[in-house]
Image 1 (cartoon, helix red, strand yellow):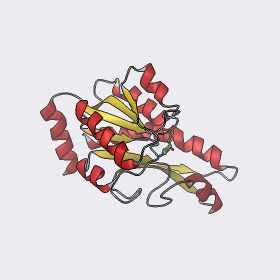
Image 2: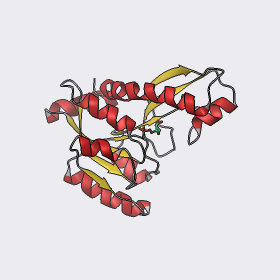
Image 3: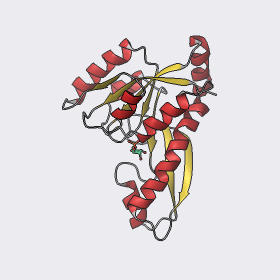
Image 4: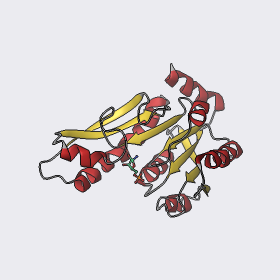
Length: 199
Ligand code: GRF
């Protein structure tokens, strides 16, 4: 139902769907989305990057690709969202990808983009919502972990799941080695999930 609506949106607009990516850190998922979006058959175009941190390393990908970006840092969420919404409107943004964005958006903001805002999380949701997922996986001696792309709802890491990828946990894994292996899979999963919801 939702997927049909999104596909219809793409067709109605007649061009790639205008997307904003929100980041706070390294932005490697932003980089993978940008790479995919160069392909003709990829349904979205990254038109704007929003960061809540001036020091976010991922901003380099926006600069390298000449994508406009805005930094709204040191602000309370109300001000952050007000400024962000203004930019989203200005750039005619229709779809949002959260990629390592560490702020919690308000219910009102999320409802305005219902089923048009998605996130990637480094665990097999509903397991390990929140932070330090890899550390908790190792501590609990889990054999399998992975990553999830999901719609964003007002409850943290709880929206409808779009796609997941399992990753085996090795006995020798540390949280860092597991994080690196899962991140590689995230870079494939995020573009796949975007294609899935528009197909
Ligand atoms: C990823 O592991 C993502 O799942 C989580 O934050 C990390 C962001 O990595 N939400 P990057 O900034 O995309 O490199």
